Image (cartoon, rainbow, N blue to C red; front, side):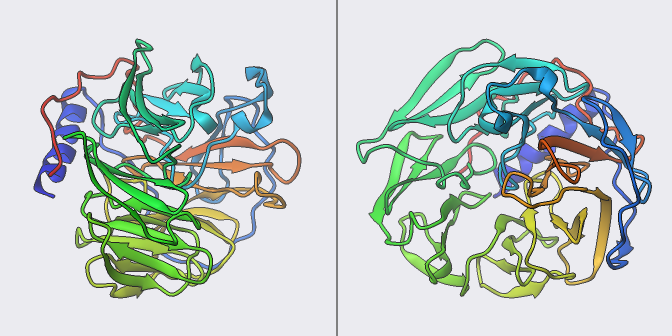
Length: 381
């Protein structure tokens, strides 16, 4: 845990050295209730417009001008999949087929689909991914592609689809059917491999610290916490809904979940309400450099919610999507520093594109496309 926090501090120091201004967030306010979205024309590809309610800048970052082989590749993936790399200079869309420059949303790279791709939280050049029974990493700037480990249990999945790697790139959990595999990347060691029954039912993930495994069952079993040997520890929720693992304001790991909106501590299962509450929502805590906030798309809005039991929010924008299909569901996701939020929208109807909102004057924008050299010798124990 201490080394994870050192890593985060190192990242902030690199930002300061590189001359980046502090991130700008929307103003904190008590939840004002549902506000209708005033008319606003859909922005063109890479055009920025101003949300008439919040004053945030909204940019459409994808478009048919990119000549995709599938329209799906113009979307971002999911609320639990961080699209920005570690220093926020690059953005990946679905399957990492497109990687964009984060300063102007031009195409940095277009290549083949990468399954279960996740950015390193240490090295801004590294993208982890799975293929068959292999866990691999690729350097997006040099194209150097490296096998990390092959697994004898079979074809692995990260989650499937909703899992993540611990902050600091220390540990990860893969699933093969109903078998969960806890793997320590830093020591190249399988810590546990065990059939836990519900592992393949919806999602399984390592916690941000790398100290817990969380399992979500969509067959009525709820959300459960295991130790690194895959021994059952406790149940967090009796039902599994959209949720994400992160930290609340007291720097304690928790799972924020919707329907009803709550967040529960991984170490005790004590839970706190996250108002307002509703079921038609996605939630993200990918803001690993800004603890204590969850990002939601709900009631037509994309906003951040402070995880302290109050009703304090930060409103970014109306998402303006019909949400009439799975693709058009907003699936909002926060940037690592929480200063930006990305979502999908059909803008009422039509093709679904990806959008980014941030406040005017925001400095955490990865404006320098050449990232600093990553720190070396960092490990999470």
